[in-house]
Length: 373
Image (cartoon, rainbow, N blue to C red; front, side, top):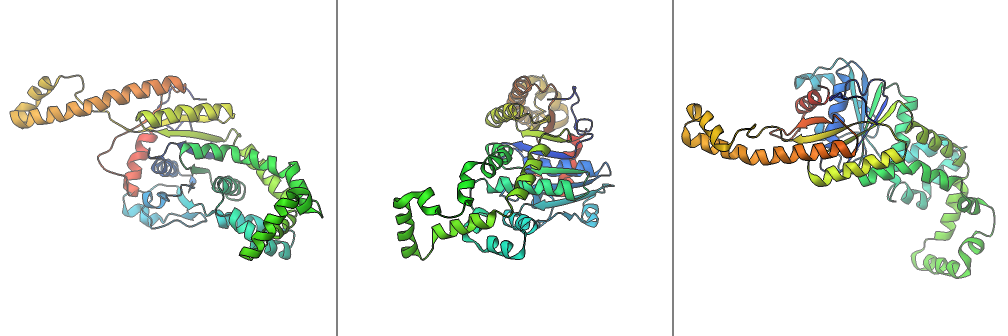
């Protein structure tokens, strides 16, 4: 779903409280997330930017050594030192999955004994840090917490590459299916767990595993699910809240891509998935677009135009160099036109290819100017 034909983000994001940036890897999505947050802070708002990108590039983009697992305000003096003085507040954090789940358990556990039993269980420790999909689950949980319990005007969420972003979208539904499904009820029912669920042969395997490793896997599983029973209702309620939040009118998805053919195809794929899932999207951002080449001149014409200022030899070299860029300009223009048609986005937000990597707040401010132009 797009809004009119406005090329900037200013009007499109008015009234939004949650912005989820999704896209392929290597297209500048983390930098874009930080620049969006900085641009919104320039409107005088209190903004939080959160990354769940395991590469943790957001700290570098903000000119920081590291980010904590809780939102921290970027020191206004640090912003001012680089010539950036937004009237609002800019906050940032990196997701700490293990800490997020520990906090959930601490809040939802009915008593201290239940809490400690869950936190100490080796099955829980593995699930809360190493299992596929836990990162996305932790992200939506932290997003819900920031939305409900903090007074940020807008939360900007950076995500892993697009295929993982689909996991992010689908995680609440999958978790609800598990929490409300028959399989979990079997685990939680008292007595006869090994015989009824695993059967005799599988129980024998667990017994051998226990003797060899010293780890009572079946016992740990049984203990884990029993201790989990006290927080399931609360966790289910929170998960339903997350699913609703992702579909609220105040939540918007922004697809970030580049004019390279493969990321552009990923953007089309992701747009179709967002539409199918009923998620609102308010624009496509195309990074690193080549805008300047021969500008309609032939190499010879441009060489002649430049000769009076540069001399014949240097003018020819510059013209031939611009001819190489002109190939990229035409490729980018064609890719963007095709992308616009396929995702029904008449006016994607264009960020030009810059001469250097963005490594500080001043660079982010330049990106923000293009995003909100």
